[in-house]
Length: 233
Ligand code: CA
Image 1: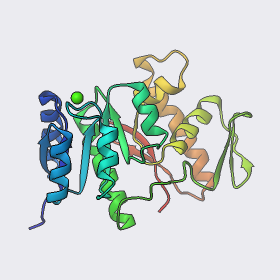
Image 2: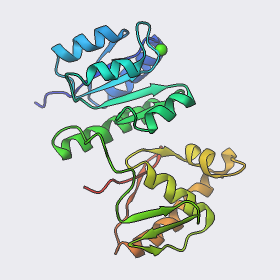
Image 3: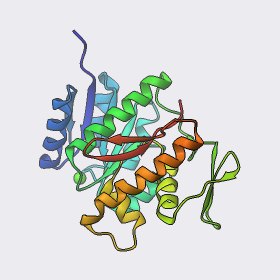
């Protein structure tokens, strides 16, 4: 029998913790919930956790301080839970070197899917990923000023939406974007009825990339969730 992978969920809101634990347990993970930063550090020091999920706002500290303390002695992957845009900026700026984040409110399925992506990535690299990941694949180059993206220094012919889609995905490898998240970032007047539009643009973008990459498809579809850019192994 396989030993279940253990995940530590550091979250002080019982309803949120329960939702996450339920979703992760359904996927076969063994989970423990603690509500305080100091408990989290003690657990990670003592136990065998493959990954930790940190709420940013904890009763005894914030998730960022907790993360810094954790990194003094452990390299386990960390995913942040956050409700605030300014916190997302800090995490995305990779000031923290975190492995991923989700914003509240989130779907438990999304959390479980991201956890699986992080664990797969960690397993492939033999340990947790390097802190200084390149923000984009070296073969693609984004020229913000010109609104163009180059592959092997050749400009790719993209429509406006394809450009923004590709740019968003390239800049966040392995990050799963829901259709709604892509719409909010890219479309001028996002509307729920437009989710199919996102799919349509992903489809045409995919066709162009396949042609460029000799049939490779770097965009991963996460059923019922959204899309991500596959980081090159
Ligand atoms: Ca909290």
